Length: 93
Image (cartoon, helix red, strand yellow):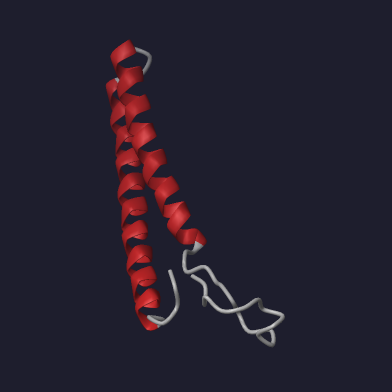
């Protein structure tokens, strides 16, 4: 977001722009993608016969769990971002 005003030097050092996205949003997305990748790799190794069924269940379960945690973290951070943006309606997005 930015204020749409002049440069920070001309504005007595006031903030001209700031980011409302946190690193937790990006880590949540990475966790979700990694969880899905684990499930896909587990299923492909199971199909190729390189992995036994009990190990595949544990691996797929951990991938699903990681995907759920990552998606939940992403949803929570997006909600926080919307709240922050609602607090500053006069700033350009």
